[in-house]
Length: 416
Ligand SMILES: [Zn+2]
Figure 1 (cartoon, rainbow, N blue to C red):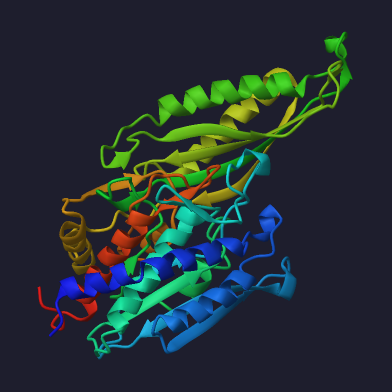
Figure 2 (cartoon, rainbow, N blue to C red):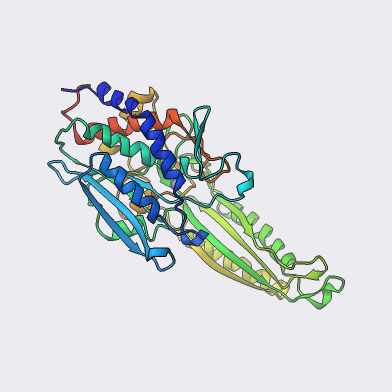
């Protein structure tokens, strides 16, 4: 009988191959149509081959129709290694990335990966390339022993995570890929020492605010209604109001409070001496699950009506995204225990369960009744200029996934 140490040593032997695989993934852009991209088709074509290379014979493609991209489809890859039971331990990762932003700011071109001082730089290296490659090679290591397992081992590589999940994980959930009793891991958030397992998320509300005033010459403000002035006053008043009204703290979460941030603001007039008739800006709110997210939205509407009356401007509120937080996942499940013991074994640390403000696919599972666990080891450079993955984390996380999957799917096959 092979030992767990032998299993982990197999992963050390994959190091160069894993680096090459992550580099190749980064070279093939996979940006959604909302951000001007063509989706994940090309990247998925490469990854499908890689999944096969990692010892999976049962590979299904779930293509979600999307008129906005070339070839009109958003691919999702579902791979299974059957055990005697259909109950499946899933690792779910996403193939898509956000756009690179200002190319000139990158020291290393975002689609030309390179390794410098133990870090692999490139767009999507951390989000979600590292975990995607780590989970694939964890499975490859297990598959290399040619055993037949008990529970089924499953990998889901999904599209459309960065822009709402409609063509990705939501599509797979609707298609019935995941069954009651399955164990769900979503390695799409983590901390630098790997000590946090995310078991809960905040509700999310993205709003677009359009303030409509009346254009005028800047020297005669009385003839117009300055939309930017109204917008700015509304914004600061509203954010203070929400921060106070929804001010509870919950220590499970990092940070423990609800957050209310203005983010994007569109350009108004092109010249300095015109009073703008329009001001358009966006909010990103992350709200603790003890509050109803619909209530927060109602509060925004109430304050907007107040400012409309006072100013004479019109304030339009549009919801760009609203996601209600599902219930926190139990820390007393087989899935949690297997992950905790794998982290202890590989990293020698005792992880803690926490909640976060960021949104991952895990919440979509929690909404429909699954417990889902989010863990990986990353420096938190997702969506940042010069995003990278530490090679040591790539390898160590693959070992954690391998030890965890071995415990769940092959409980009597590896000596401990
Ligand atoms: Zn991600």
